[in-house]
Image (cartoon, rainbow, N blue to C red; front, side, top):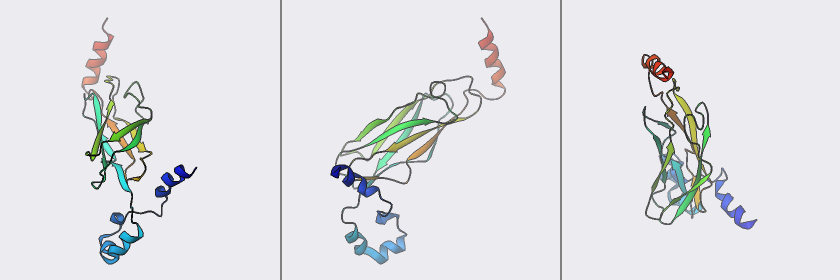
Length: 168
């Protein structure tokens, strides 16, 4: 009970890191802000809210960052969520997986396998989510990213691909 409560405590909306305040607030409040949050939690966040996979690419590469002040090991959980892109047909889904940041690293790369699908004639989308940061960390501003997968072929090429598939 108590350990879980202490982990969840930093996630309350009232705990806003001072660097998210407007610059004028930082200057005006200065050390008072630091004193009111002596052990401000560090952040883990996705580096972008949208990633575009190039046609024909076999993997989506997602970047996750953590605060530069980080000096120890930390972790977070990540997973995929379907949208218009279907698991198995467009991408290989990923169940909840723990990813570790070693103490010397400030970024991590997540790789999601993209399925080559000639039947994909329009851009499809799925999501990557992060959550459950280790003790002492908060989730940053971006916890869900849309992954856009373009078609393997474009307009005029679609008929020739269909014709090739119909041959015995």
